[in-house]
Length: 161
Image (cartoon, rainbow, N blue to C red; front, side):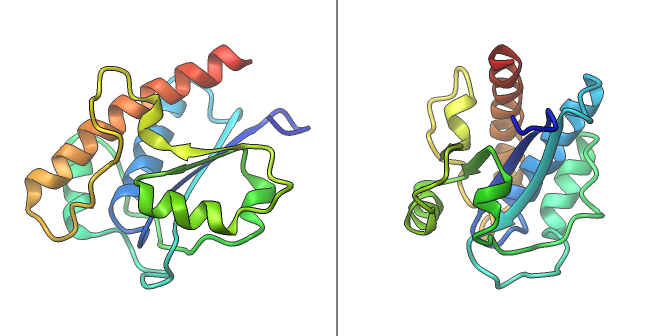
């Protein structure tokens, strides 16, 4: 938590158009529903800059909307070194992106850098798979994993306070 009492969470995938914006939308929805929007700041980004400024993938947006999550205002961005100064939790969707983050992580970073699914109780998977080259079922599966991990993350943050 920062001096202003706000915990900052950053979700990271490769292009910031599928998994991490899905996590941002789901976690934001849960945090707002619990009346904690002023306590937790949420963002997402990608380790690559391929999709800077672009909206989330249409399939991700469509699947999220089916479950009541709005991703239309989100836009892709690439991680920056200053994100390590701003965020307390930087959560990667998979090992490849976690490795990229670890390679660029400043020694002074004192937050939590890890996999998002660490927080998903009852989930056997360690990584949120990239649905980009698959069908709609992949985006639905990502939502299942993200919902489970989001609930677990919020519980962990509340226990910590």
